[in-house]
Structures are given as structure tokens and as C-alpha cells.
Image (cartoon, rainbow, N blue to C red):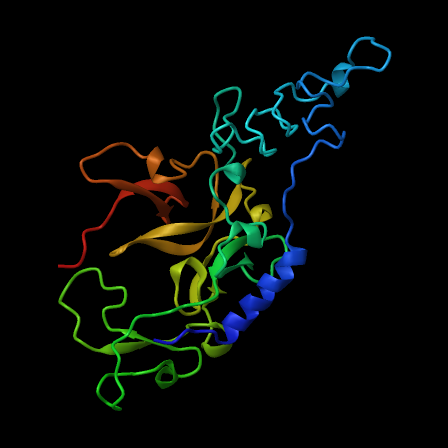
Length: 290
């Protein structure tokens, strides 16, 4: 097996290096030098030097956890002690723009073999996603030309990968003992995407080569049909389960954020993009091919 590090890989590696100094990271702090987030060690507000009453406007967050956000979890993000989304005080819907995992802000949010890359590409207001730099596909080893459809990535053209024929197999007739080529649909080595689509690089969202996905939005500013709209990379339902199929607007009125929001049924349900309702809804997984 060989490791892939083609044109897209070099771009992502450069992005990783740039992100060390360019991607914003959040560093909780209170700005008062005492480390508790409120101006006093006990979380109750900075005591005036003259012993007078505490000014309510400068008394801090009152939670005493040292982060200044008022949620008591110590991380400075205001998301609640369990790391989840802060529930609205009135019990209403959670703002879609602050719900769940929406990607990365910098390299520290990704593992050592990933880069934090802004997607869709070219939009400075889009958010970052962790993208694999190294792609190591499995394939049947061969040395004799013609023994399999391909023996090396070089047999598949620029940007292509030689993989086991069973790659992505999830049902149906058993695949033959062979290899096959995966070729990029877009990017420097592909023909390009159609109208309403955008190119995501190899390594993004589990794709081994550059792939075209839908682009219903590019950043949160595009999602203004209702308050709280946010642009997400969302899963679509497929015959093999689910996969990220596009960037779409999500709103607090959507039926679900994750599968945990879906009702318990005999068949498990997942939270996926519904192109008819143009919203995230619960759906049963499709049976695998016979």
C-alpha cells in the first residue's frame, strides 16, 4: 500500500501550516488578572478597595469556575457543564448556529493527520472542517500488469487511487477479487462540478478523492429565511447508510439536530437532510442492497 499525498494533499498540508498562525482559537480569560472570571477568587465579584458595595455591573458571572461565562463548567464557552449546548432559559429551541459540532477553529481541534480547512473553499466566512491529509487505501497487492484492474495509484491517472474492488461495499452480489480505480470528480485533477455543487478535497467527510457535493449555502449569512439559521455540512441518506452530501441551511425549527432527537421506533432512525422539506428530519435507514 502507498500513501496518497497529491496536489490536494500539498494544499492541505500548507493549510495546516498556515492555520497554526491564522485560524482563530478560543482562549478563555477574564481580563482581570485573578483567573476566576469575575474579578474575585470566590466567583462573587471584585471587592472594592474602599470596602464599599460591589458594583453590579462589574461583579462578574457569579459561578466561581474561573472562566467568566456564567455556566459553571470552567471552559469559557457558555455551553453548560456537560459540554453540550446551553439550553435557553425559556425552554425554547436551541439556536441552530450553536448546536452540535460544526467543525474546527484551528489545528488543535483536529488530530495529527488532519488539517483544519475552510469549506466550501474560497469563502472566508465559511467554517473549518478537519480534513485527512494522509489517505491509505487498502488494495490487493499485485505486480503483474493485467493481473488486476490496477496495481498502483499511478495506474489510475492524476489524483486517482487504486483500491480494493470491495471499497465501499455494503451489500448486494459479492465483489470480485480485484482492484478498481477511484478518480477525482473535481479539483486540479477532475472535470469539475455541476451547477449548485461545490468541490470538497480528498480527505473531507470520508471521501478518498475530491468529490462534488451540493451547495445550498456557503456560510451562515446565507441562512436568513428564519432567525438562528446556520450553514452546515449535512448527512444525506444512502443505500449504505449516511454520508455528507452537501452544505445546507439548518434552523431551530428543524425536526432534529442528531439521531438522538428522533423518536424510538422498531427500526432505528437517523437525522438527515430532507430535500423535499428542505430541513433536517428523522428517517429510517434504507435496507442494504439484496
